[in-house]
Amino acid sequence: MARRGVGITITQHILNQQRQNPEATGGFTTLLNELIVAAKVISREVNKAGLADILGATGRTNVQDEQVQKLDVFANQVIIERMQHVGQLCCMGSEENADLIEIPSQYPKGNYIIVFDPLDGSSNIDVNVSIGTIFGVYKKKSDETDIDMLLNDVLQPGVNQVAAGYFIYGSSTMMVYTTGNGIGAHGFTLYPSVGEFLLSHENIRIPEKGKTYSVNEGNYTYWDEKTVALVDYFKAKDKDSGRPYTSRYVGSLVADFHRNLLKGGIFMYPADSKDPNKTSGKLRLMVEANPLAMVVREAGGYASDGNGPILEIDPSELHQRTPLYIGSREDVQLAEEFISGRRG
Image 1: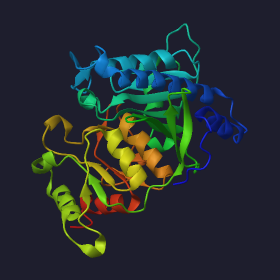
Image 2: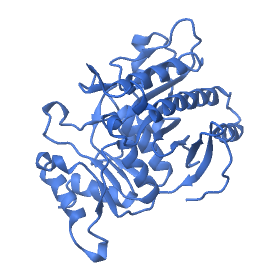
Image 3: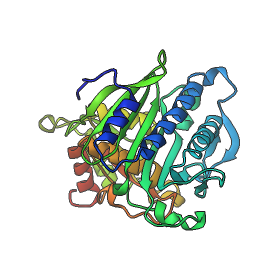
């Protein structure tokens, strides 16, 4: 992973890429810049959350039947309010909203779609664990303008994303993003003294094979035999294959993914029988799995649902769930062999 070019702002970086695309109009740059502003606002509130009345639950649940945290509501509102006026979006999709989010009639519309998880890992807000914002951007395929007809434009395979990334709010605030097409994934750190994201991790490359597995082993008794065999394999002692792997699990997808992206390893959230309503998996395909799958692909890694690439899944609903195995290519391919039954 190179660290050349420290001092380049995220805006400079986006503009440099825009100049390399003769068909670029600047609209995409405007969209990303406004998202960065939203993330700065969220980062500020996260950093002072323990000092303000913004911790804890609101007393209601979201479309996923999960407790909504106060900071969840704030982050969702900030992103919606910042993004709806940029004039580049035809609609938005959020983990916190059951339906697509319409662009108000007083604002111009465009041909991009953004889907996002405004505050991933929010159950960790009260205990000061790193949390984050995940996003994916698509281009509209049709000429539809009616919000009720735009769902078909939103439900595209992740391979169609034109950009994806995440912000992580931890000991420092970072943005990692990619626009695909082999340009790589790049990381920027927010320098509070200047209020800018500066290039800190240029062309991130995840190791081909890691030494860490990340999974909630509290669900062990709810896994099928293939998943149990996979995790037992990572835990078994075998010097020649570098086992046992080290177990590292934060319980915040962004935090676990970010660590493995930089150091190597595999994050897993398998399907389980714990909740009969979530037997197909817990994580959201559109707002969590697809964006991170694009990032890891551009960094040389791989993401699978256990049977094939996450990015090739053709979604059928906005809040579709999926199992997720993501990280170092060799580790994920090994997991795929176990889960698909090609290896016992």
